[in-house]
Image 1 (cartoon, rainbow, N blue to C red):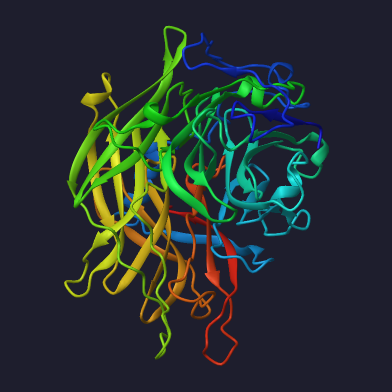
Image 2: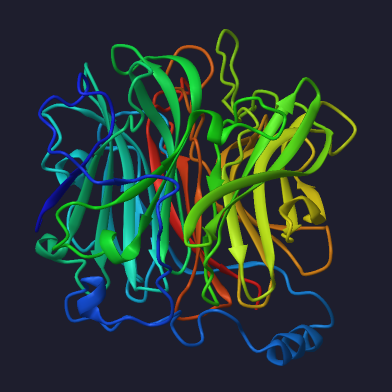
Length: 522
C-alpha cells in the first residue's frame, strides 16, 4: 500500500494523534475538473485517463429494436454464464452485505468484512483480504463493516469504501485501485479519515456509508449516531455528506486530501426534519458534473421522495434539496422464508424505508432510486415489495418530476434490499433478495423496459436452506449491488447472496455465500 492519508476535522478528543488535515469549507472556491486529464494529473500509474470507455455508455438503439422485433416483442431477462460464488462467510457475521462492481477484466467483490477480485470466469485473483487490513492507520482489532464498491468508468479505477469502529472512535476508509493493478497492493492508495467530521457536538459514529460519483468528484455519505461502546450505537443525529475531488483522491502522492463536509442543518429535509440515509448516485455515460442523491422522508403513513443536488455554483460547492413527490407508503413487513418450523422465528429484516440505491443515466437525463415498501401483490397477505422511481431533474430543482414509478414483487414472496441501474438500451435493472414460505432466500434481478411499468424477474441463485443465524428476526443483508459491464453496455453484473446448504437436520443454516451473476435482455 503506497500511502495512507489522514483527514479529520472532528473534535480533538476523538483523534488525539491525528495529523492536521485541510478540509475545504463548504463556501470555499472550487474548480471543476472538466474533460480528459493525464495519468500524471490524476495519479494513475501508466493508465490513460479518459471519459467513459467507448461503447460502454449506450448501445445502438436500432440494433436493440431489431433484436426485439426478431423475437416478436419485448425480450425476457436471462442469466448469462458463468454464475459463480464470490466471497463466502469467513467469520460468521450477519448480514452478508454483498457488494461489487465490474471492470474490464475483473469483478471487485466485497462482503461485510472482506474483499477480493475475480476474473470473468469466476477465478479468484488472490485469497480474500480483510477490509481493516487495507487501511494501515486503523487501530488494531477494529470492527470493520458496511463495504461499498464501484467501478469508475470515467477514470478506470475501482473504489472501495467501508466503515470501522474501535471502543473509542469510528473511521471511514476509501481504497482506490487503478484498473490493471488489481494484483498488486503497491499501487493501491487509501484515504483514512475520522467517521465524525463535525467538531463541537459530541462524539458520533458513521454507519451505513454510501458512495457515488460524477465525472470529477466522489461523494461519501453516512448516517451519524451518538457513540456508544462498539458495536452498539446511540441515537441518530444527522446525515454526513463528504465530497472529494478525484484530482486529489486518485493521486497517491497527495498526502493531505481536501474534503468538503455537509452535515447537521445542511442535511435536513425540506420540511426541517433530519434526513436519514441520503443515497448518492453512481453513473455511466456523458460527463456529469452534478452529484444527484435521493432520500425518503417518512411522516407517519406518507412518504416524501427528496431529490438532493451537490454542484458548483459560482465556483462554490453547494448542496440543495427539493421534494419531488409524496404519497401513501408503509414500512415493509418482516420477510418470510422457507421451512419455517414450530417454535422457530425465521422471519428476516426487509428494511426501514431508507433508499438503498440511486443511479444517474446522463444519456437519458433520468435518475433512478429504489427501496423496499409494504405492498400487496396477490390480494392475500401483504408483502415486502420493491418500489422504484424514475426522476427527471430540473432547474430549479423544485420543478423536478417523477416520470415513472412502480413496484416489483410477487404474491406470497417478500423482496428487499434493491440496487438499481440502467443498461445501454435504457432498460432499468433491479437486483434484490427474495423469499417466501415455500422459497428460501434467493438472489433475483428484474428488468423494466423503457416507458413501461411492468417488470420481468429472473432467478440468479436459489437458496439452499432456511437461514437461522441469530435469535429472533434474521439480518440477511442491508443491500445488494449492480454494475453495467464497461465492455458490453447490454450486460449487467449483479452481486447478491444465498444461504448455504441446510445440513443440520432441518434446523437451518447460519452461513451465507455471495453470488456474482451477469444478466442481459438481449
